[in-house]
Length: 303
Image 1 (cartoon, helix red, strand yellow):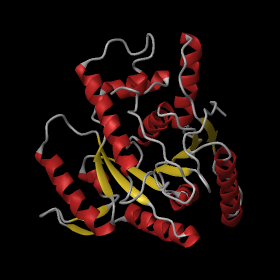
Image 2 (image 1 turned 60 degrees about the vertical axis):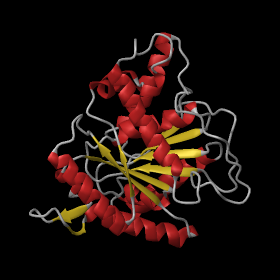
Image 3 (image 1 turned 180 degrees about the vertical axis):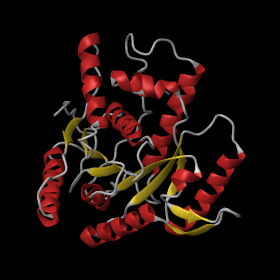
């Protein structure tokens, strides 16, 4: 387990706010988005727990390990979450495997919830029992998709001639089942955000078509959209050091800011602002009896 937990700024009467990064398709940028959300929350002063549900690939886990190593090597202070990694059960029967997975996820959340105000869960790029259970527990679900109709096909079937949405697809159906399970458990609401990733610097026709079709689908099945991260080398470079765009002001880290860095950091701020907004009348899903919500500072402390 990594990290220490600072003094709380939000008092919860029941459990932490659970943010899930999910998409059945791999390579959509879930772990990069998860890490930036985690660090953004930490730098706002919140106590954060992180769960890597894809412990075999371990992208988020390696990101956190690299971050701890960079902090130690450079002698700088980098905020880290408390974290857990969960390996899928190898039990012989499906019933036994699901029971073991359920127990492992419940134990991890319970352990982190004793001190964390937010738990961020990074799901594998596949339909697994652990991923489905995480979706059903989510207060906020963030689904990064590459800005193309290839990735869009996970959400809906589209008419090839007029780009009209024909029907929701496999992942949208998974989220629908998760919403029903979430409501049945505690009458809670799942706030779903679809994050358009790897946007080009110039808007092409395909990008406009994806955007228009996505907005049509959003109205039908109930999600919010947000512009995600552009196709930038900086994200791949930062991963090797366990860093995020909110760490560039640390002593000796990141060098001088370029215009590309500034634009990329603004993309992160836009994502964090969209997540904070929440559904109407809610703030981080924390408007409950006995919950005191503190003002939120910019992601990296800048004005």
